[in-house]
Image 1 (cartoon, rainbow, N blue to C red):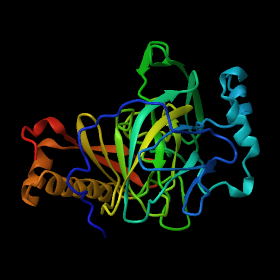
Image 2 (cartoon, helix red, strand yellow):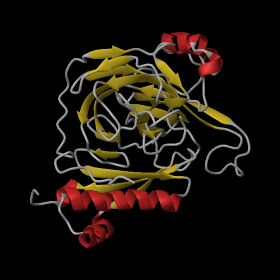
Image 3 (cartoon, rainbow, N blue to C red):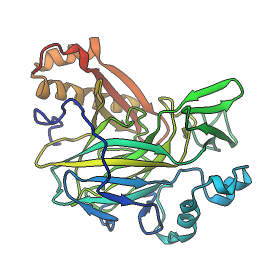
Length: 339
């Protein structure tokens, strides 16, 4: 396995200036990948390192007629939802269920590189979100052996989701799924792994930078599974699912060895691990945090292990996507001297 440490200077303090996007990718039947990340996918757009791309995405709430049947007004459902559901070839769907917009190819990206994805802006494109669980799904399937669905009205001015009378949830929109193509073939959109994918990491809001190891030519970045908000764990298998548009800046780092996705917020360094086994996922996240501290903060491995025990939080990301996720959160403010 390649060393998971980035070279010094790759994770720096974030400054994400907002500017007009260089490219726009709308969600259409020809610009989405339904249920997979694929190394042979045709790019929706090819960009240069440093370019910004505005990407429109669908929710996982389902087709327009189903949403109308659940009480959503037709005029409140983005028109492109119906167009994609009716126009995407049935034979090209799967094996997962997420509808991901892209891919965005980055000129010159090759296996062994790292793609830096600056999340500049995330806009909520609908006034509702959905949540639900189903038979044999979620973290407690034997305790809830049936299906339930809920529509959650969203107040986009106050950034509040009205879950129920007397229960309002602050909105923190992020993409549940962002990632690149695998080294070959096609992988299910549901389990996150080294390509990032369906991480469901609620820390990845606007102002955050994501770093992903490139495994296929062009990188082939896609995004989708928009969430207006979510709790760590995502225990019933859905968040506040909704329609999002994101503005991303892509920066290519050549020949940077990294095994797992990483991220940086204005306040934390984040490493991540994914596995069918929660203990193994935790080990991946912790080992990568130790590697980061050794390589980026020039600590000994012993000191990095001890610092991880006294200052780093290991949080469950999600428990329901085949591969569970754990992310390690290292606060920046503990470092009083720049190294």
